[in-house]
Image 1 (tube, one colour):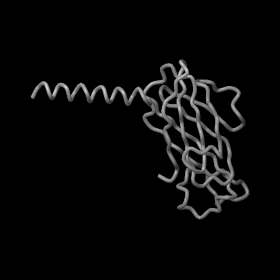
Image 2 (tube, one colour; image 1 turned 90 degrees about the horizontal axis):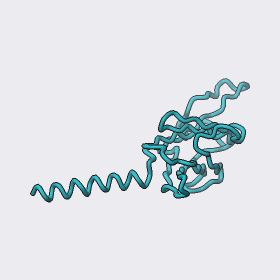
Image 3 (cartoon, rainbow, N blue to C red; image 1 turned 180 degrees about the horizontal axis):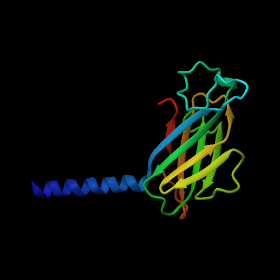
Length: 154
């Protein structure tokens, strides 16, 4: 019985290590904020749960941001980010953020890292309702992680 328990423990440890090796993304969060309209003080600039507010989203300027929590940033070269209306789509945005590169980003975009957490501001977009974010990590050796996907409807 001790041998079987030992073998199961080893298999569990190897499985967990293998999963961690496949994707160090511990969590991915997507936020969409309504831009404050100085001419319409009724609109607010807090994160909203889309679908619960009475707004005509098709005409509103939205400010999406993504927070990526990683187990490690060792050998990380870049983050490929897609933002789209459906899973895997990039009809809103596709951009590769170089690791720890904060200069030269397109207007409205920002990159910030605090230890193993990366904050990405993704500029302004009009009419984002259903939104899916996908992140793939690129490593220094050219390999990539599996895509991690999240949407703002969950």
